[in-house]
Length: 378
Image (cartoon, rainbow, N blue to C red; front, side, top):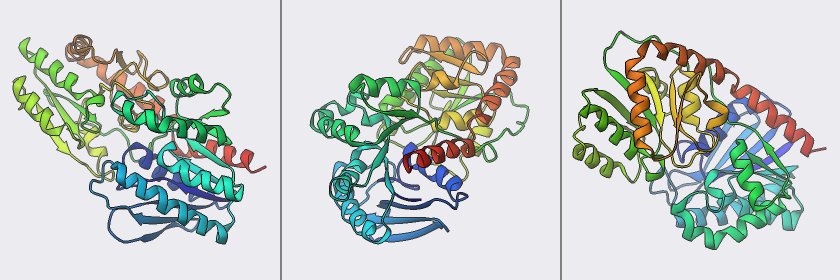
């Protein structure tokens, strides 16, 4: 079965979508019945070719990358055209059975080209920002690109969503679409529990891009509220982003600069250590589908505190953590106080997190994709 994939980001570039792509490749390399070519962006100025495994090859095209964590509109446009020409050329040689699109924008465009001119079917794995209205910061852009997104969805053989909430959002836009929900996964061998030294300091970790909709402002304010009540907590903010300088300034304004540590970008090979050093995980996002970081923290045996958005209902309940409304700093403050006062319960919550994470092992998720590919190819 020959598959052509389009994804404008692949590690070290990008965020969650690239991470999922990478992790699935680690499982797909064990499926000899699959032959996969991926067209993605290069980090440098030259075209690169990587033989990921015997059955997976990656073609990386330069798009003028300025930042490894996010893509500019110009970079997305460059990728769109380069991927379209490259995909057309590769298909003449390989004769693919179908195309897999990682995120509607920009990867749907080259897939549509092959669909229109070569009759190659394609499927789309949705990324949260693909959904018109999902993020307020994209409202202006959505007005321009939403007709294209809806057209691409209509032409796709199937749409893949990551959680129930994402599926409902997509069906709210077009109830006639054929949708399959396949959750994200986690490497439960790499991300695992490690016994901590006896430390009186309660430390939480938040692994996410430092941007407004991830909600780190709320976390900083909650830690400040607790300090005023004589409770000292420490937070490790892992990641980079446009709001980093603003967050550093805000921590000073809230009189907690010594309690907020900014780790910056941490390579995936060693990020597990950031979870293992922490006592709990917090993700105060305003929008989230199914967070890779949340799954990783759970696999490391951490109690988790998340907002009531996206796929959190599939991952978090009273047995392994806490859920609060986005932006509710008082609720987050109360939860953190509760955890501080009942530290003995943290171990039980963490053990339950680990048990739940084990059901989201990447090998299991990869087999769900393989079944879908077989169904599509027959």
